[in-house]
Image 1 (cartoon, rainbow, N blue to C red):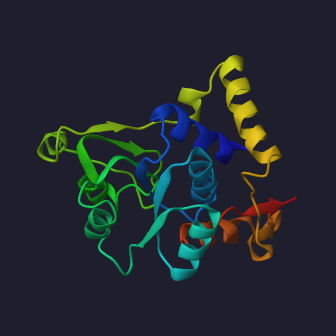
Image 2 (cartoon, rainbow, N blue to C red; image 1 turned 135 degrees about the vertical axis):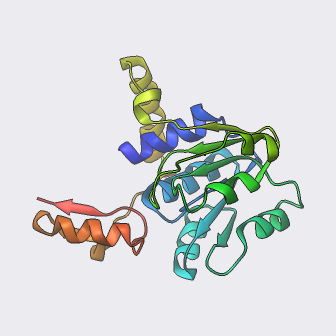
Image 3 (tube, helix red, strand yellow; image 1 turned 30 degrees about the horizontal axis):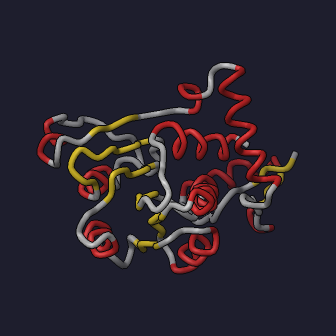
Length: 206
């Protein structure tokens, strides 16, 4: 539910994705990423997702990603330019953090928006704001669920849209058997998540 609400505020509120719009979404085969792929397809938008393996690329494409970039095998910025005909994108959604910060900025058009909503590789620190000017008068935001869904009205609006997509079968969340862990193995589950060896959502079972 929280992952679905996260995608809601990212694609509908932080920056409103339009039909046919091309945009970059990191970790497209993760729990949030796979929901974003499905939601983007429902909006008629063109999500370009980053992945680390061929298997994850297939998962993202199956979920609705328009294109995928394997960052272990391809140069992210050059491949994105190739996909977009040199135009790059208006918005980048980045949950990775430190490892992708500068390359994400390099994927943006002039006056584009960098949405930094996570830091799985570590926090972005010591930023010289001048870099935003150098790379095209860019904007950066660090949103959170608590900042976008705080009132009963906001929660109702978000939940209604999310549940409508789930009820219609547009969004599906499947948890692979090998990613279901008994609660006593919580530490192991976290270690596997941190190693980025998972696809989609994982589940702890009491």
